[in-house]
Image (cartoon, rainbow, N blue to C red; front, side, top):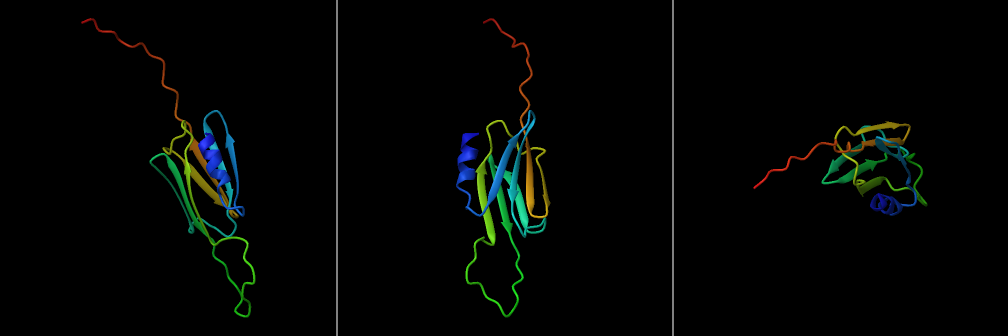
Length: 118
């Protein structure tokens, strides 16, 4: 889990993210103003959470930027906590707030291990 926390610290300063935990899942909440379900992609590959988002801005023709504080793109590659799985993961976005729910792997059920004699 510390690898995920460290990776979250490396996100750009303009990106606000929270990591929450329950008994059965992790919840990653990321503020991505101007992003909607058509301009964000989230996936899990090889134990890593990949997030690509882009903001669309309408700038009036008579104006140009003097300074821009937030990037148009977010490209994040975060390690999953060791007990998290991408299977059955869910993501929602509402008014620029992206929530990604990552279920925890179920603990291996207790069972008797057979012993064979040789």
